[in-house]
Image (cartoon, rainbow, N blue to C red; front, side, top):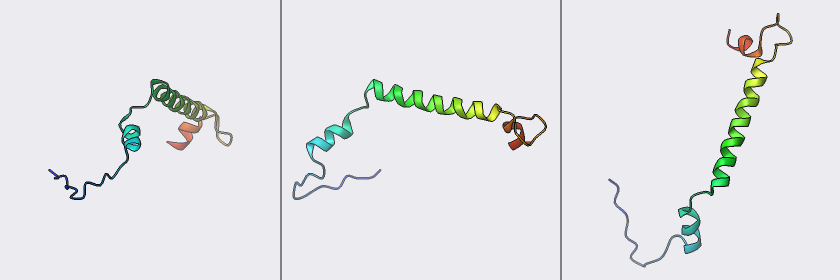
Length: 67
């Protein structure tokens, strides 16, 4: 395991404000907002992949890419 280095001068590397910000968990609204945005992004990509490929014979973009 890595040992913590002692600070002989007693200098704090981070201020109390920075430690408070780092130590706080994101609020519930921020966490759910991030999850919803990621879900919407995945849904948009999924819908786009199901669209018909314009230069194919009616195949989807997904089928065109992965076949």
